Image 1: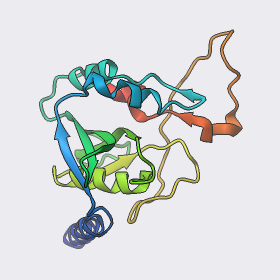
Image 2: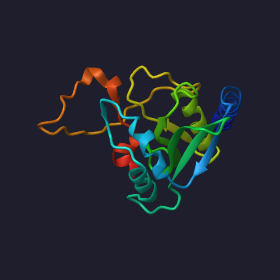
Image 3: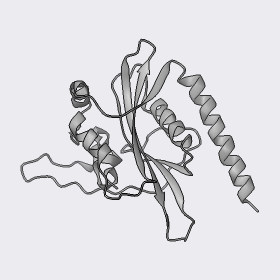
Image 4: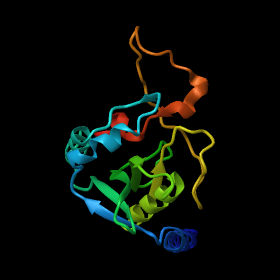
Length: 201
């Protein structure tokens, strides 16, 4: 009996997100791309933090073209964001995946949209929250049931209609000669969901 009410609420939320993007991102253009050009490597290198994983056109293209599974219902997409002068100001990578049994509660299969990776080249033009909004709308346009975004910052500004839920675990090993891992300085880290097994799942 509650299903029609939930469907209406979800549909309303999606329409509100679309309207919010129209208002806050009117000066930006989001386009689907097939691959990352090598010319973007210098900008990708500048995204590095004191602690972060490798980024290059070669590595991102390899992630986009390879996966652990061959289910045709699962797909990954690369999007570029340009401003009015047609400068590339950001990018993001999404994944759509069918989860047959998403939880131990025995829920029905869900089509989950994930924002695997993103990078902002011009923070004066677009911030992380606006990028998440654009990524969410591209995923909802694909008909996903839910959108997940995993972020390192515990005090990240949650987008409208989202709530913090659960954790995404990732194991990183430091070499004996590598830097000391300071758990209290997570804001200096740049680790995305794509850096773990999720990048190929």
